[in-house]
Length: 338
Image (tube, rainbow, N blue to C red; front, side, top):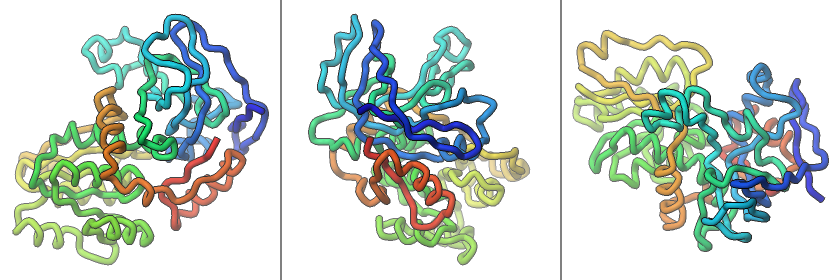
């Protein structure tokens, strides 16, 4: 029986019957396999986006699926294909879209936030959102493609080069994926994280990882770079401490990349930007190239994806997944097997 998890406000999740929507022309109905719980889902669960979402809402966008049914006119896919979804629906009319940047459309709809998402048995989406994944990539690992595409986008826009000295501030799922993709690009990466479990995990993955509340991060970076500073700092923590320290870590003309969404406007040292001619780059979501790159990376088998999966649970365990994420303990990525 088709089922779905519905957010009803005030931290309430109801498990109920799913609504299998027949695909219209240009759409595909997917049988969802796995879906990850991400920070945005937790943000919605906390009620922080109640003014934006329509309840009851089916959340979820970090997913993998099998094509179950195709609408008229969809010719590039077949029933049974393994796919992931790039969950963006741009207007294709605003100045950003006209400039070719429809991933940051001024009127962007995000599937799983502004429209129903993947915490359900069957999910109907526009066919243009689909990316086929190869048979050698498991559907479990396929659910990591969306966050991996975020990391690919971040590293691509930062133009990471072999030999670059990179610092990643924040060792959660996105931070670790940024670190992994940057290392694949040839960078020497240091990870800064205050959660002891995540520090240890980063170290187990071969990174030099430190807790900045226990070690002098600035001193460490200067030691590793002979006093020059890092070439690139990825700010993934979303904290005031991260926004403050990123300018202290960078070399002359170094690059600060803002990955995190800050809850409130942070204070940033613009004097440092002036004196060292620093550069600042915002990065948001991804583009089709990043999904293609993420699929290639994951399918190559060079990334330790299993190490990032804390647990695989049934859809009914969504509330417990949120509770474990809130505790901030030994959690990296929780997947739901739909």
